[in-house]
Image 1 (cartoon, rainbow, N blue to C red):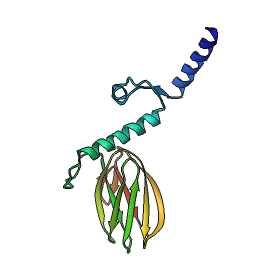
Image 2 (cartoon, rainbow, N blue to C red; image 1 turned 135 degrees about the horizontal axis):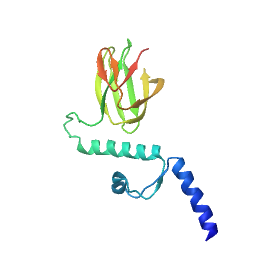
Image 3 (cartoon, rainbow, N blue to C red; image 1 turned 45 degrees about the vertical axis):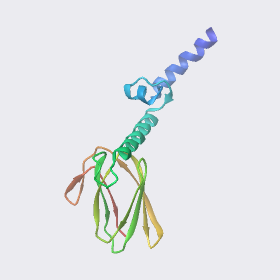
Image 4 (tube, rainbow, N blue to C red; image 1 turned 135 degrees about the vertical axis):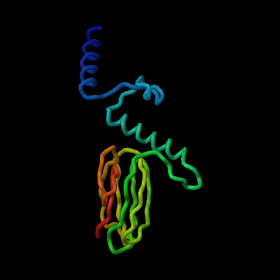
Length: 149
C-alpha cells in the first residue's frame, strides 16, 4: 500500500503541475470530464481538428462559404503565378494570378504555407490562425499569408 501511495501522489502532483489532464471520450472532454492523459496542447489540437472536421461536414457541395473559422487573406503580391498550399487542421490550395488576394476562413490552429512557382517549392512559412486582430491593406483580418517574390 505504501509503495502504491508513494507512486500515485508524485504522479498526480507532476501531472497537475505540467498541465496534463486526465480525460475520457470526446463527449466527456467537451464537458470537461474526459478520462485519458493529454497535455493542454494536445487537447487544444484535438478540439481544433474536431472543429475542422465539423466544418467539413457542414459545408455544402455547391461551395457556399462556410461560416466556421477565422477570416484571413491569402495573397500573391508577386509578378508571377503561384500555387499556395496550406496545411494544418485544414488543407487548402490556391492557384493565384499576380496581384490576386482571396478572403478565406480557417479553423484555429498551426498551419504551414508552401509557395510553389514554376512547379518548384520557393519557400514555406509557418503561421497561426487565432483570434488576433491584424490588418492587411486596411482590411481587418485574424491572419494573412502573402507571397512576395
